[in-house]
Image: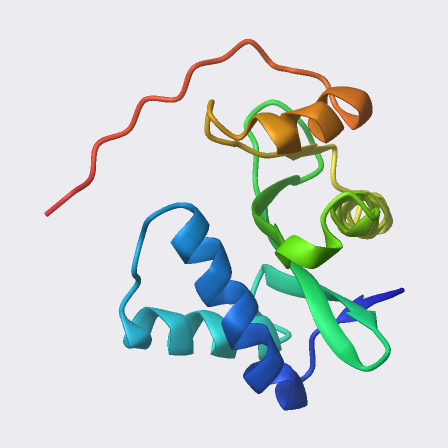
Amino acid sequence: MQIRMVTSQDFDQWLPLWKGYQTFYKVDLADEVTQQTWQRFLDPAEPMHCAVAEVNGELVGMVHYIYHRSCWTMGDYCYLQDLFAVPQQRGKGVGRALIEHVYAASKAAGAARVWWLTHETNEEAMKLYDRIADKSGFIQYRKVLP
């Protein structure tokens, strides 16, 4: 398995991963959002990044992460926003390798912290997360704006 940054040639293999992630979380984002997100990954001026896991020329996982400022540290924080592995690759280290990639990239970028959210029902993923990160104890509140 190779972990690497996404390239413009990866769109056709990335899209099913992105759609699979949306299906898992029971959302359906507009095509315009998907296209804009993809373009942001390819723009070096954007703080959004995408790395993929590749096995024998096939993309089997992806992670999206975003750097942002914090009032609590000098260095940025890194928000690991989306993580997905194809079902047949789960339990084979894809998720862990993608998270470790984000840890390494964030450290190299001078970030002070990597953080993420998961749904309370995502018990399989939490088994991994509990081994490689600390629970913050915070509860998320949000308001969707019209």
